[in-house]
Amino acid sequence: MKPKEGEFAQSSRFYRVRMREFFPESSQHFRTANFTSAQTEEIDMKSRLLATLLAACAALCVSSAVRADVLAHWTFEVTVPTTAGPHAAEAGDVGGQATGFHTSTATVYSNPVGNGSLESFSSNNWSTGDYYQFQTSTLGYHSIAVQWDQTRSSTGPGTFDLQWSDDGVNFLTLLDDYNIDAISWSSLTYNPLSTYGPIELPAAANNKANVYIRMTSQVTSASAGTNRIDDVIITGVIPEPTSLALLALGGVLLRRRRESR
Image (cartoon, rainbow, N blue to C red; front, side, top):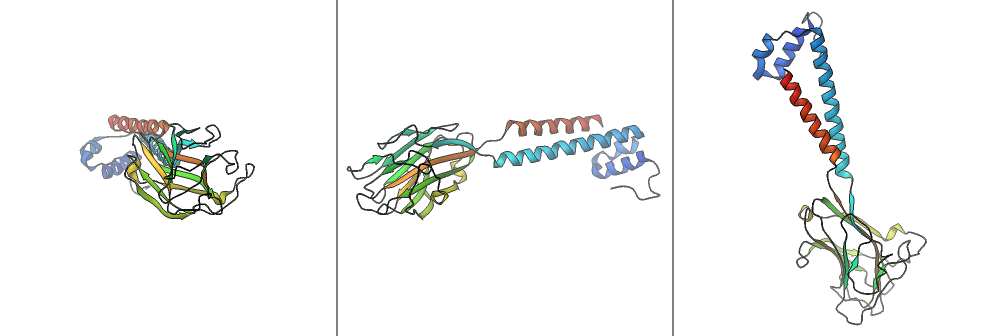
């Protein structure tokens, strides 16, 4: 805010009055201060610099909040699953294990083509309560999310629940009765209609030594019916050091500015 014409004949008086309005607890100090033109220009320059740094810090903090790191990614291209597992994640900063569970001892696990890839995790003889499970750690991370590809044969199970747990025993439902369409996959062509998510987990999943995610069948299908899964990705967010460093720099400059007064 600039002084109106005719008010504050000298710029030093203008700065004393404005600063006294913003810092009333130090009004006595500002009444006795006598800033030269050079000093007022320096104050104005430092104020603009501080405002620019804090604005940049805020922008970086916002950008870091939406940038997710991959904690674990199962492509099944290396593990080539032909058993219930465990199968280690092929990629990700943390890693994890994938497993399958079926009540039927006749279940066969196999590795047909994935969604635009050579491998996937597949099984038959599905009963209600059978599942695929994916485990990782979220220590130091928040905003945990999961994304995956899933399809089935014409007689495979088509209704699942997405569930999560931090102890591997007590599970809560994230998605209730989501549907799986029978979409043919090709090793050469990715089909986005088979991709589910990303689905964000609740805050209770943040910073946990173990987080378990299950895709659990809600139906019993024909014994030969199959369901397969591919490209399971679990992500999380961690603050970037650059954002924290810039915030600290802004705090140092603010402190020095106050001390200089």
